[in-house]
Length: 192
Image (cartoon, rainbow, N blue to C red; front, side, top):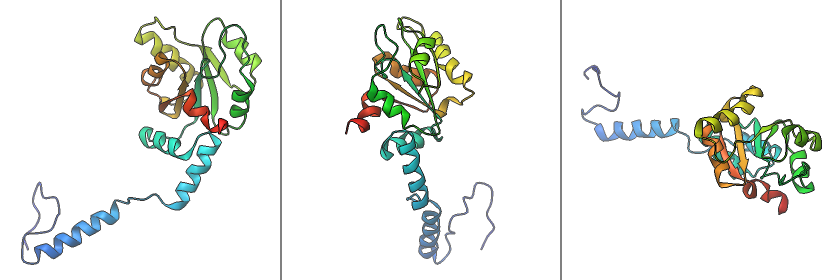
């Protein structure tokens, strides 16, 4: 048998017995590439999904895409139904956020409400800032969304953005966040 040279992928040689060695090599590769997640990890992730107020399938999809756990949920004030004058969110949203464990609950607030007023009226939230205006350019939007994330000392890809208006879906991309869900996708669990 000759030695493997530069560019050789260490696959089976072409000498007699080639088919058997090819079978063994592919079998060994398949064993290295697990197709299933161990049960213990699935159970841990199911528990984590519940702590975040999410179903397992949604959580697993976001985690697979971002490669990170979710350390914070960033809601728009629209997603929290804080619309118009009056900084208090409805009871259903408050109850849903009270069940969230081991994750920060952040919000970006649209006028006429203020971050200070929303935090004072909703102690379940950890931090708030001013939401990007709909007429701001991409850089300004990125800076506003990233600013709240950076103020909390979080990596962007560990934050899940939850919004309820078309422009809010771009916040996730602008801040390089872990993902985006609509308010209906996030809060549907509490309704069922």
